[in-house]
Picture 1 (cartoon, one colour):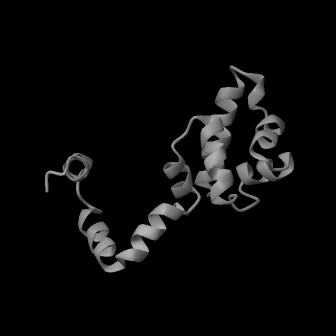
Picture 2 (cartoon, rainbow, N blue to C red):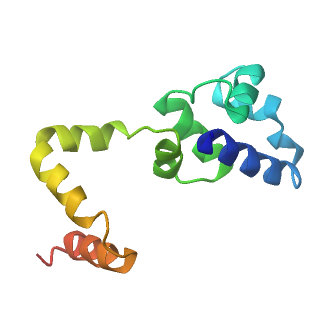
Length: 117
């Protein structure tokens, strides 16, 4: 199973149905990879590209870069740096909220963002 490749192929094909600029060849050229490589990634025959290429692909496809990175089994560099600064705290935080309902996690995020803690 290749959730990353399946997702980008589905999205790219959906966009291609409305705009021929979303062919494998044209998208690959815009993100700076070979069309054969992108095609293999979509089919799960090749590992997902680098963080930089995934972020470029997210922009091209109008997708959230963090979601594409997660589907590729990666974490963005800025999040890795935050975790490295306080690994125990982030590990505890993630373990505590992993089973919380989305609305509760979103409430926590809003409180932190708004400085209400």
